[in-house]
Image 1: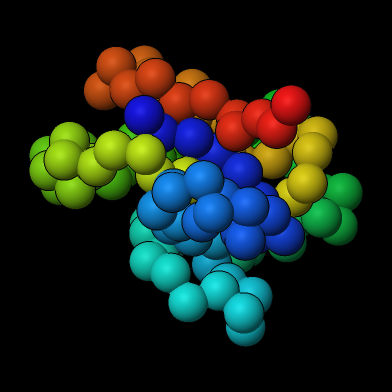
Image 2: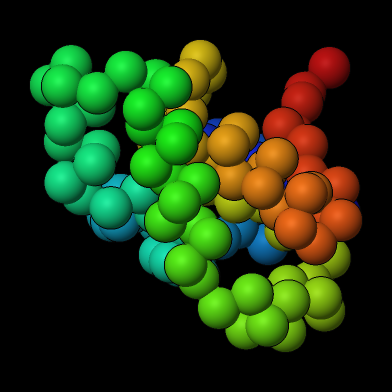
Length: 119
């Protein structure tokens, strides 16, 4: 299973036996796990969104266009053998590229990607 989550809960994820993979341009200094930075939004796009120069819809469109340029065979090779992984970024909740990525992974590879929840 592939999950999504955010860096602040890394200790809980690791305690639950998940392999943590960062999907941001940079990770926090305490994160020592794997990075899959290809899934990070490009800095210029992210910056324009943060500055309000593009809307959420524009961000989604540009991010999906970017994801579609990635080597899908390499992604399939990298992710087919993974189980119990969690893709991490910074946002606690709300609008975030990890949710766009989860849908894209489902649509392009059939991976079931869900936000990791605690009861």
